[in-house]
Length: 165
Image 1 (cartoon, one colour):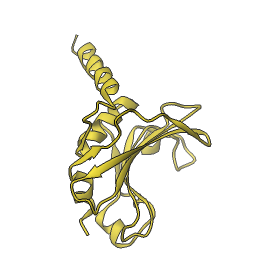
Image 2: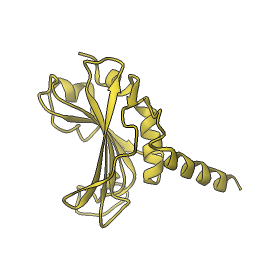
Image 3: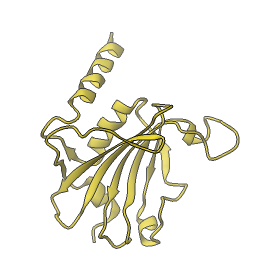
């Protein structure tokens, strides 16, 4: 089996010809996107989930699907928006109150953890869902041959041009 970092960075391609529709999943809108890996033994998908009441509360995730050595689907990487802290004090020092990334580590994999350990998170370099999606595609080496995320790329170019003025 490949390492977690190899699975995250191996070349993948979005299979969908058209952009999938969001579907309601409890208090979230959810979109699942099928990915094809160069290594056909690796089964992954991309998940986008947004809270209906707070659109900045989102997740863009790479899920390792079953069958795998963990015995369950596992989010290896999650790019997230602010969604409230795990602590009682709503402080920006708690990364859950800011844009952040959760990484599933090799140690998490060896110990077959369901979720990544608390130490495996850091502040993000994006500040909106469009930025999270584009950064995520790059981090996970995902090609988008049918332009599923052209709209997000265009918005990010507009934001960049506006910032340069």
